[in-house]
Image 1 (cartoon, rainbow, N blue to C red):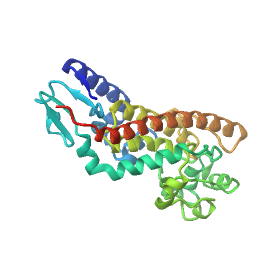
Image 2 (image 1 turned 60 degrees about the horizontal axis):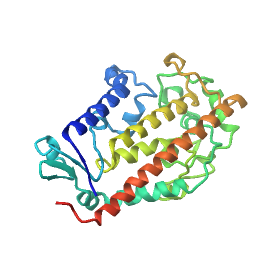
Image 3 (image 1 turned 30 degrees about the horizontal axis):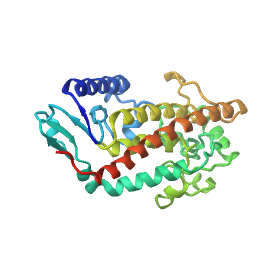
Amino acid sequence: MRTVLTREAWTALEAAHAARVDAATAAHRERGGDGRSHPVEDFLFRYYNHSPARLRRWHPGPGVLLEGAAGTERAGWRHHRCVGDGVELDVESFLDHRGATVDFVTGLLAATLSRPPHLGCFGLHEWAMVHRLDPDDVRHAGWPLRLGAEGTDAVLERHTVRCSHVDAHRFFTPTAVPRNQLQPTRATQVALEQPGCLHAGMDVYKWAFKLAPLVPSDLTADAFDLARDIRVLDMEASPYDLRELGYDPVPIETPEGKAEYLERQRAFTVRSNALRRRLLDVLGSSRRRREEPVDA
């Protein structure tokens, strides 16, 4: 079955999505190329390489026919087709080209959901990324280390590191790599990913935008909001001092800091798992929709 949206209805949804994204990305866009990258707000665009303009583009997802769209640029978008004066996503075309990615993401999200969260990492991946480095060589060299280089190294060295995320682990310094109880690789990603991981939670946004236009834009925007919120904790619990930007440290080297980190990490696990389920519903229904007869 397909849902039919009048031109008035879908253009209102399109405008609301654009306004939502514009508000969320305003500071990043205004900063532009002023020279000093914001370690929280710019991260999602630099690390994930997905621009505000692409995030702004609205997709209703599969099974939605947009009346009156045949005369718009949507008619020429890849993996779309015209039905009368309307335009809809061509699910079969999308799956023909992106089916392997859909299968991988489905397997990864399902595996992650099947596991209990590991909540004892305390954001030490950020500390492992600066371990034993010269201060000028750290990733965010424009910002001071809250405890200094020696104090930062000491925190990492008296904690147990158990990072399961391959794209966090690959930025560990050479001296930090052997301190990780796990040695995640791309080949073991599905086997190791777990829902308590902050970076796995941020990655829900990556999987959503990578599977556009199959994934509805409201889901992608919700995943972006979660990723941005997670990044705040990621950097507040990091060794960097970002008080100049308005971020109070979460001192994970103290019992109080650990308690705050755990509380916020638990809340992010709930939010990320809810988004994983929504994304799996979209991917599963798209596979089923492919088998349905195409309406004329």
